[in-house]
Length: 149
Image (cartoon, rainbow, N blue to C red; front, side, top):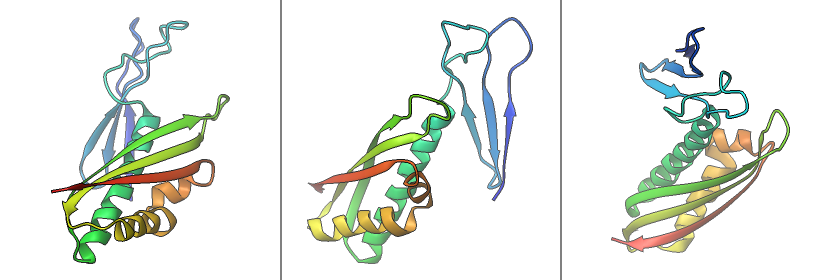
């Protein structure tokens, strides 16, 4: 797997901490820093997600992918899946994630709590590379709700 990340800024007078990631699969992702009121030349312009937000989003995508795939392979009639992640970070550098909560909303027909809970646990414990890595520094908790389609 490869990815090239390039700074899109310049050495001009404007604050610019934007970055463009080009993935090995041929896709592009834009990232930017937060505006920094204390040091305006060091901050971003708030034009795209922060790099750590993309880490969190990738973790949610990785886990939701697993949950849907596991349920579909089990022949459950899953029609939708979303996950809301809330996270806390350490106050000092390197400001790693220390807590992450993932709340899944799974939509389908005749879905039962047991298989959904099992799919989430399998993703968290075995299949989602991102959550397994982040679990080394963060306490990761999960919850879910079922919605009938």
